[in-house]
Image 1 (tube, rainbow, N blue to C red):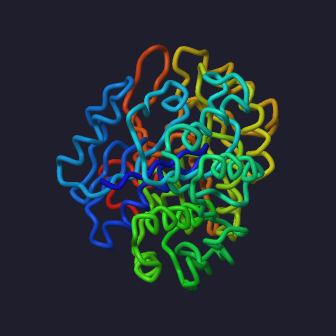
Image 2 (image 1 turned 60 degrees about the horizontal axis):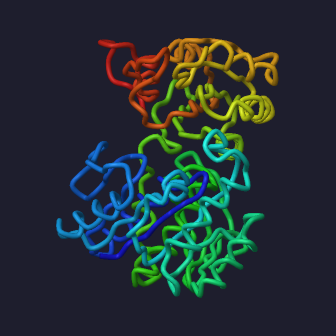
Length: 387
């Protein structure tokens, strides 16, 4: 069975799912596994039986092989790499999507976090494997050096990559892109939003090329790609405004999401977000700074506070957003933001993506941001929601 492993701070989930879709289009029975659970052509299992521990992921992948799948694209998390949980897994190709501040509560420093991810190429990917690397990253030379020492073949993607992104232009229904894969050019619309999505497309093309799919077949499949749930997902319209849900929970991911949606807005750009508790507290002010600089209206609310005081988390964010609207209850924040939209506006609800529970006070309650948006647009029993 063909195995593709994907690591990086942001873009893992989107990349593995795009890879699955491209392989399926080429007639290869494929699955993606990671934050969304297990996804196949038959649907999604959000909680497949994967035990945590050494050899567990390898055994899970072997079971998928017995289930008559030809390929699996999976997320390689920094925690799994640092803990040796990919022991026994030998991917054919591995990709590095992005790097930014995240998981410092686990790794301590950005360098230790990077070194954990680097293990995918220095230890997990067998010598002579194929690495697909983001050529525009400041860490690209370091990644390239490790891969060459290990004897990996390297495919690069991005504006400076061999899988080349030439241009991205926002439209009302997505993006118009010009890109090139192994000499074959694509110039047309994609039903996706933002440059990060297009970068994930290119990375997925690199992974699918390693599986032997011709470039012409890959580019023919691009207009049919659809974003995973909660990843720059358009979830509604209201009074001529558009509303998106995205999993952006790091400063860089939030910045790039806001930049992407700014290009799609003819009116004001708003964002609803918070930060998780019992995680890296240093990024809270950074997230606030990004929101203040990237959006016209900022609604600071609760995320998964876990056992931490949510007011303390909001306070740290609001130090950088003195004119931010503080609305502690997340559903109420979404309702208020939707109510204040006008024609041409864009609203981003960030941080949780497709998560269906909100953790606080040692417990959890059901909450999907997309459902809260739908209720705000058309309260229960009020008729269909405009999408």
